[in-house]
Length: 426
Image 1: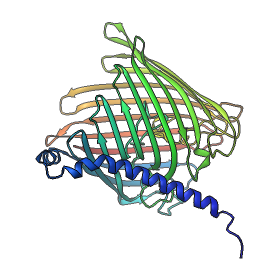
Image 2 (image 1 turned 180 degrees about the vertical axis):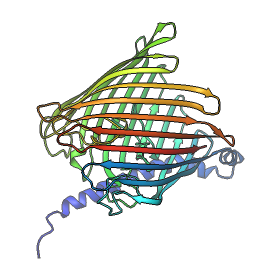
Image 3 (image 1 turned 135 degrees about the vertical axis):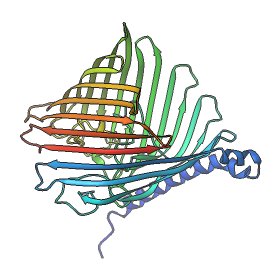
Image 4 (image 1 turned 90 degrees about the vertical axis):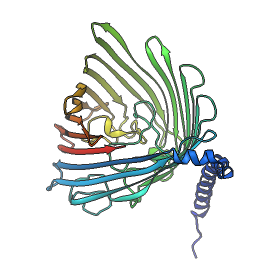
């Protein structure tokens, strides 16, 4: 009989996961105990009755053409998110939220779990799952403590986000502490034991066990804007290449230029190294700079973003809302080993109170991609979006049309995507 060589490691992993589970269970139980103890008091009943129902429904048609595939993908999907949030009682509140996603007859696409691999990917798999379940304590002045499954978004989502564009969003099983007790200063810490990814309830890649610490400190009282310092220690079981430690600074702000004009600017630098179970040592940088001008709802920006690569490793942001960066076609969800430079230009316009149409917005973005180190050109992309939010039956409904067109790389396929979306939320 062969010895179970991997048994100690398997046992250690099981013990760590069990410890994480009981930690989260203990935190949630500790927060909810006062609610259970005082369940007969009228004020608790009032907190429940005065709570708020949550509903968000989104119908989307997506079409994808990819030159690596003989067939285009098309999908009509519907996502419903529903739940309830209580009002606060003794500083405690509770939120429970589920969601489900279904393809509605048009399902000629690879959802990553339906086996239709002859089609391009549309990562909106049929799913039924618990999206959020957490207890929040706000009994300390200007402080929030939250434990459970929750949405976590830090800064502009470039490093930590919820991937809200997809039908199944990304949530985190975490304990989060945030305080604004010092004027102008926001301090956030989160400990994450599991990441619930966008691939749905049936995917083997739908969840990642982690031992992750997130630190973020922002100060918004500087004359030039908001300065943020962050340190993210991401340790992912079963996906060692996603593990890293990242330290960085971010500055964002705007300045009035008179006569309705405003100057806009942002600057981010970060350094990333291997961490815990990373398979190889690396030391890489991230740099982003953007400037722009706004006037009466119109905005023009130019920016540059660099994620370094060394030929074998690259700067990565595995917990980010990746769709929002480096083009909506999602060609660069994983940073190439050669790294990537993105020179981009954008024009946008927003207006509120437009007769019949309500709020109206339009955006067009151009990207020019190239490798950080020597290598083939990485192509270019044009993105475009128009959205309107009229009021229908006293509820605001958002309709949008979006397009992403990536082309021009000798080593990557041409990709064109179109989305037609209707969203109702209350």
